[in-house]
Length: 145
View (tube, rainbow, N blue to C red):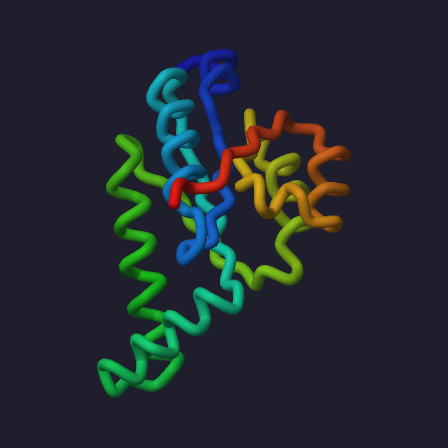
């Protein structure tokens, strides 16, 4: 593949908080990558609700929290990778520090777009990062009830 062909392919970064709105950002990223070829990076945010889901899983399966977290993340990674023809990279991060991290990573990785749930984009720290982004940002609507 020629160098100019590599730069024309999509590299979409999808921000996901699994217990809240993961499917909408994954769907947009999947569509972008399938139309333009390329790859996706999924940034999984571990917020309070996701941590609570992991704790419930640990209790139900009689596992330690670190073991349950590892299994939970492995399953998420496999689920997300299966949705992209070329697979995907998955990054797991604490939700509190994610906004700046996501946009710095997008700039470093020559991403073509960042997909963010509307709920996050409306929060102050995310809003600032979105407006300062050097990469186009797609904001997904809230998931249907």
